[in-house]
Image (tube, rainbow, N blue to C red; front, side, top):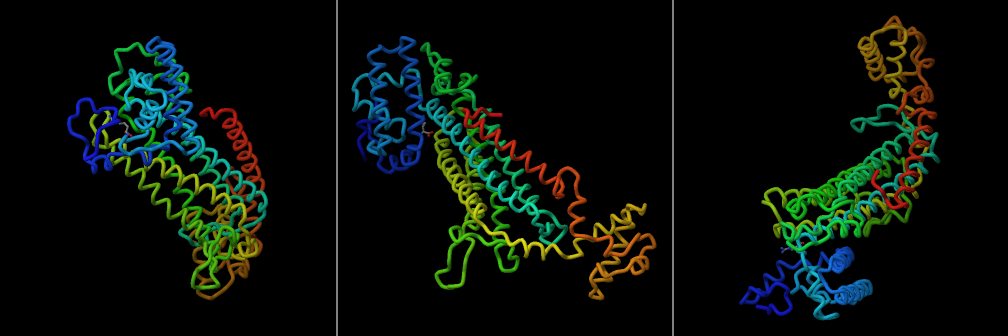
Length: 474
Ligand code: ARG
């Protein structure tokens, strides 16, 4: 047993808390990450209480002084964390009592830890979603720069991990630029949905005291007080949304990583990761391993797990606050850190990898990748596509059986299979044309890709500028 001395709720208790219970229920070892936001919230709350005449001006001033001191202690690491005081909210309040004495007892006027933690969490999410958005923009910028450098590098595009059709490497990078753009959009959307401030919702039903909820909402940079006190203290969908956006972004990073792993293998040989982004083997001296993309791929498991974890925690909870909800924080902090780290090392790996455009070109220089174009040559002279597909299928089958290069077939050879082939395979098939003629919007032709790169560049610049200017959600 431990003593209840110093606990802020010990009034109705006669027996002290069991030590095991204290250890089991404490959250201070992780929710101290919310200290900065908790202090912001307390400062705004105290100022409002003073303004509303709910606490004397001297006590208001003492509270601000005490909160300043706690802020300094948190920043320089000297703040004493006591697990007996459960969480960051009670640790800060208890420290205020040590620092300023009696006026500290007025801070929690009209407030509960329930509306307090919900508000802290929103401030945390606002900042963390903005950081995630910025990290995604920075990665997109790196991909874009590399794409421009490699504008004429051609490689096979794959379906089923089988060589399918030739594309520009820049087009391939642009696919990820698009994905990461939508990922950033999800974080921006989330910020647009956390404009309401839970503070003043109390434990669940507000308070009889005349708080000014609009003043605290404004002071903390929210748009308005939340409309329903029960929703305000019991909802965690903003956290779920963050975890979901993070999990999706990690899945995209994982797919990119998988390609970096494949492409850096001897079998592909398309890229070489820089030494600074590779590691060696403790046993095999020749090895250069792609541990960075492997770990990004691996850590995606946590991000998915964290989302499932919070969804599962929340699914059976009756309104309003339940202590289960304390379990929202570790998954959230973990996903935020995992995403931040993954974005940083992926951007670095992409920025520094060496592209072997020769190897890529060799892999793309397989006339079989142009078989669709042969079918389209028939379509151009009026043959229905299904019939053309069937004819080219037979041509390809013949080449495979006889070990012939598709390009070696004369017009007569082709016409033996279908009478409408307009020219020889060599005349009809060209790697360059195969790429350059795919110039519809969204295609891999040089002009199309350059337009897409320009559009992405403008968009990235605008988003970064708007984040720098205060990060308004779009
Ligand atoms: N540490 C708690 C949490 O994170 C703070 C709220 C506690 N509220 C309560 N009524 N026990 O959820």
